[in-house]
Length: 77
Image (tube, rainbow, N blue to C red; front, top):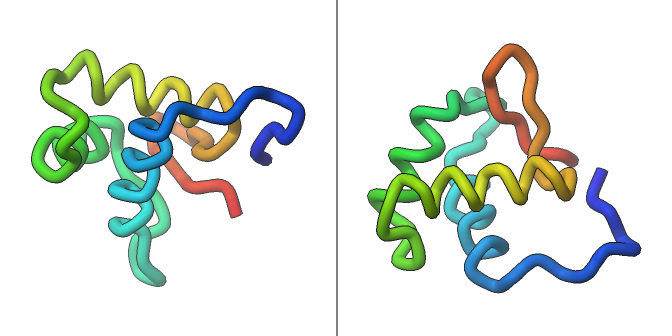
């Protein structure tokens, strides 16, 4: 669940979420950390280094935009 009382995420992290969200379809409801990092590095203009991708994913997990099950990332509905 997204935390409503916390300050908003920076725009570049919200845009990273949108990049990842495009990967989730009716057939695909989870991504590995490796696939998520690769997707951000390949398609998100704000992500230049792996550390940026890791940071964005960590913030999305911390804020409840994504959640993790067995090292797989799922989006919060």
